Length: 221
Ligand SMILES: Nc1nc2c(c(=O)[nH]1)N[C@H]1C(S)=C(S)[C@@H](COP(=O)(O)O)O[C@H]1N2
Ligand SMILES: [Mo]
Image (cartoon, rainbow, N blue to C red; front, side, top):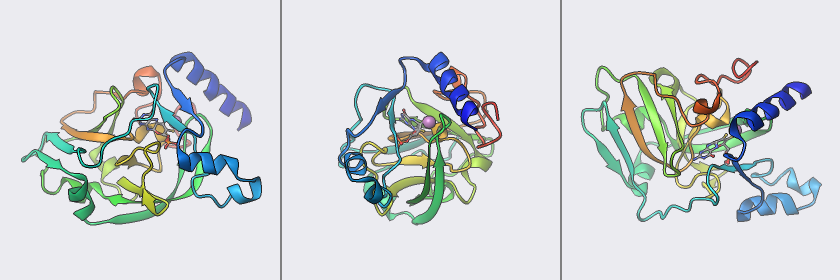
């Protein structure tokens, strides 16, 4: 396990040097998670996370101006406000989170919207095959197939551990796919493009990572 983790870290260095921004403690919550003594840190719900962004600072989306657009192979393109998203049926789950570089956070409590409910109003065209999640943090994006996105443990998360997502963790919306590595889950999602093929690959996949990022069965495992 250990040398595999090192191998993956080396791989990350090889393909992504200078691209991945890694921040510790820039966000209030994460700072708390790291400053409290060890015994207490284990009960701080955000403990263990590393905050990733491809830019030089954490995007701060204005909740009043935020819009999520759904377009592409749909019958009716839709634009949702944050209040619209919060009025959709609410789903909750507890799942573990794994980054491909070797760190994990167990028992993350997510709440948000299942893609079945999110896509209902737009309506998928018969030729729809994939969902491309476009982050407000350009050019970050990633794609899930419809069967992957519509699975019962996948959601567009709005809350983490009982509170709205922090800016660092992707406020106001991020994709959660717990059976795949974390890079499949775009933070700061502002657009869902429904596509008719599975040829476009996401930000990290363009840099060498697997498109189907199954935990334990991809990226060299
Ligand atoms: N927009 C955006 N989404 C992103 C990333 C990123 O850099 N930018 N990093 C991904 C990776 S590799 C991981 S492991 C998780 C990390 O989530 P966290 O920053 O909330 O810990 O976010 C994913 N989503
Ligand atoms: Mo990651």
